[in-house]
Image 1 (tube, helix red, strand yellow):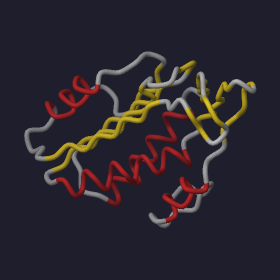
Image 2 (tube, rainbow, N blue to C red):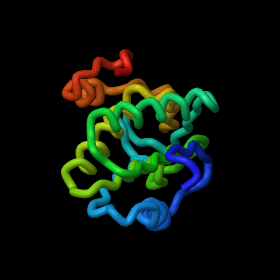
Image 3 (tube, rainbow, N blue to C red):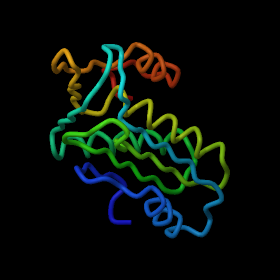
Length: 158
């Protein structure tokens, strides 16, 4: 695979991404995959769309650093992170984190760690459109709490 990280506007094919990741290494005995989708509801009510912005180059570098930190903590083989940007609708896929390893435990942990890290540390800005108008979305306390269990405070990468 050419890159571990992709920031893109187009949708992704989960099966194709996992097949590519597995094809790179015959030692793989486990694949853990998380796919996040746009919900039609949030704390503010009904959501008709979500728009994501990022800083090209900076975002990829930040996610690559997250992957490096995951590699220091967990024994896994391959990883693929795709995050979409632009205008998305409810039910659209927004993020993919896929991790391969010899056994399931390392894949599960690395995948969960990367998702917790992405939710709080990756430089994305989300704006929701609701019947009341648009609003920027802040990280939730529950996302910060998920990151703290890895020994990381939100805003302090690593």
